[in-house]
Image (cartoon, rainbow, N blue to C red):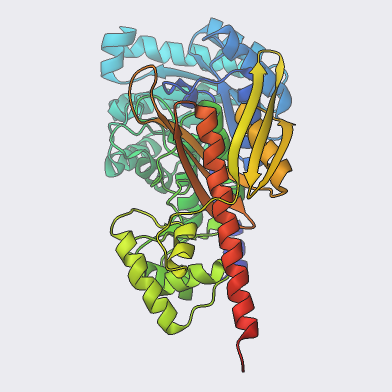
Length: 528
């Protein structure tokens, strides 16, 4: 669909609100707790992302949760800020106190409605639950104009009783009714049918917004959420990267991009700034330490990467052949053609061109044969190995710079400082620098010595043996002049290994530059 037509069509669709619960339900994911400053940073980014509602926490749960909701409520300018509370007066008062600074506050209260929860958790009758709903929603509505009510475990509730509860909540003043799949039990057809039946049974249902909140225990959270949207839900509750209790919640990035990509089919749109999706995903990963798997939809490292030769050929001719959305639409600069054993000649030729090499047909054929031989042994071929193929030598390297000595000073209250001595030929070079840590300081000292600035894009250290004297392997991926180079080194000292690995990447970059210069000179000097 043409972009101008798409924009006009989106304006004509119904709007689905995105309710982000990363800071509440998402933070309940084991290992994903954040401190106050981290929660505020995430909330600010969520507002940049353009979500409609930020559920900032559960104020009654702890002093930390209360403070987070209160601080976020004062910082957020445009989005609605919600605080969760049980259908209990004390909870509602605490939530309202936390939301006091908010420009657009929402009290979100809930109670369970399934027979399982009523019998084993609440130990209450239908009549008692209905009274709790009326009392809690009415009280919340007396404090706040925007009240959401959730029927916990709605997907396992009797639909007749569910309809009674929803009607009672609407009469008491709720403007949003959430019917969650709390335990991730539903399947899309069943979950969608529940929304249809509730809409058919409840009077004045069109006065309020129906919301969906799905968990991913069966891997169906996104599918169930979209089924709810198809059946009248106009708010979707979700989290960045799909974090949350147990197997997580419906992933915001998947919901939003499914609506954007298949909006014509679904008949809805969102107000999310999709170009901020990857930035939001990466911020959350950095704050929690919970990284997404490489094959994660939308935000995974492989989401816009192609290795199969047929796919790469199609991508080089037209990206639309194998990509249903552009990487730029979610905040990624470009797609990646990964060179491996499934890659073809077209991708190899293109990568050599990106590296500055123009290959004649016979040169490409020779390089391709050597490339496939190496690719059978390795998962991925890197730029320096491609250069080595052209030089007709194995991918080993004679260093340009050798590490002679280095010394680092670091500790509590001390600015990390490194002094590094390198040798290049018969010349010894030494300089010092400070950094955020000892490794960063050493890398900065190397930059000062060589005058070559590299951008560190990947860094890891892992153990390759056991015991107190274990050997660690340092791995770095560094960008020099737009080209990536890898470096590896092993050492019982992680800083030594890190310095040697960086130097290896730097030396590979220098070798590649020399090779390109020689090829350019040969091309210029070749007789007409």
